[in-house]
Length: 437
Image (cartoon, rainbow, N blue to C red; front, side, top):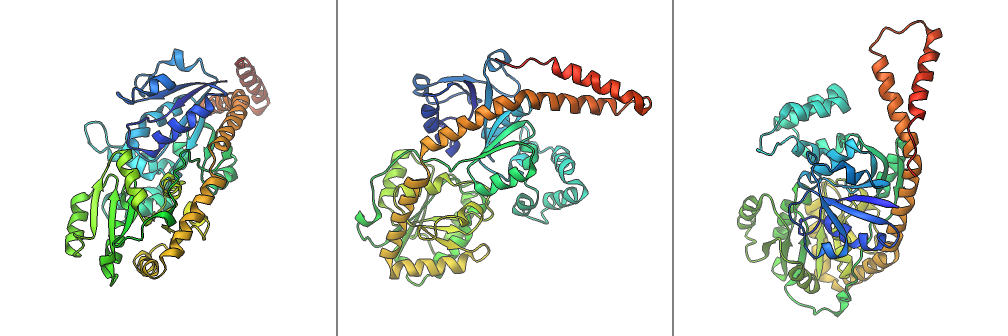
């Protein structure tokens, strides 16, 4: 089986890049894989481990791409990493690994061109085409600052547009899988998100240090609830027993620094920013508690959560979507829109019962080892790929018949007794498509 794998690659600051370089070596034992990226630069060490090619939506070497049996597209919510992947997927149907179910952010930012000019009409047109006048009215309200992007993401996820070129879809979120399966539009598959690095550190082997080290990792977008975290810390009477370190990109860093100062948390909160893998691992080894909030969730399965569990770190999470289905013995839940209240209670509980939380971390690592094995994920990808390859000729015929039917609808056709002749013409044209050996 020959596969084209479209993905961001390190040093791109996305977990999907890490996901690819860890799962690909396993897949390469069973398939001939060519990796495609739109990056001008990637880690040169990857060239020794895999075949990497460059392409963009306006530079597609079709002769090479068409040599494969199937294209597999990694699709997430960040337009910087997935714009070209999505555009190519609409031209050459294949299997989409959908890392985020809600793509409203993606399509909003996709309407910003390379000169950083926002194309309002393009964005509104996309929303209207899927959701009609109701969606258009809300999109205008959003652009005028009357409703937040979180409202748009929940009500208008734009998933159907993201999957415009999909024959099959694989997701690591079971709720997303159910939703896609019920639509009966794609070959769908589910497998738990894999984790491929085992860290021997156990929470109960760490020193009982004060201040206790709290850690947050990953991209700190609008749904990570930083403001609520800061206010909760400020309300904890014994807050001097904590220190919060935040690792990852923070788009509104100046705004959050101002909040930290206003709340008197300068000695308690440190915004570390994006750091090297080694520095982050050192921080995780020394941490006692993690906070991993997502409100709203974008329908993702959290690679950050698996990373935290690999260090046996107890974690406070939002009780939303994928996170709400996590083992309640392995996490402490925060209810949506009750973040401050629940965080204060959990932080006080941690100070009173640190060993209870240490046990949560141990249970989290057990969950990781039992349900997130990479070999199972690789096998699920290969199985679904085989199904998509087998179904692709039928998909091509159906797509062509739909297009021909749409074109014929523009003409004044003869009486119904001649329609059968047109259907035979369509059938003849479609059956002339050869199957790929």
